Image (tube, rainbow, N blue to C red; front, side, top):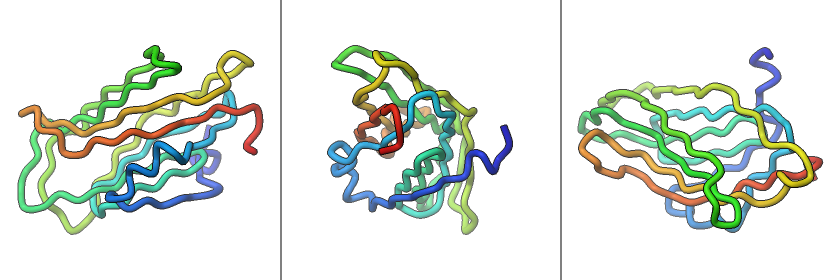
Length: 144
């Protein structure tokens, strides 16, 4: 799989104060598609695309030590996946930091189709939650 296969075909942007809208506006993935999570630290904007999922936020004036990205995926209230990625320690910077996760494959098959509720957050070594939000991912047979 090369990088061009992972480029987004459509993008939707969200301001951080509009994160609540993410839970009512599902990210649609075609079953069995390979997708990748990418996080960019700089601006306070969330961008979701069909194949790449980007997250962008700012660091102001402080060093963040041991920053982790966590998310838990549930279907009908039952946990089906959990991601915990250590991002590292970061200080304020004019240039954005990028973190790309390994590609993942969306579930496939009749039983896998449907809506998945995802709770995501950024936590540091001190247990401080820097950003937390919920969103919905919907697995469909086709992109429509």
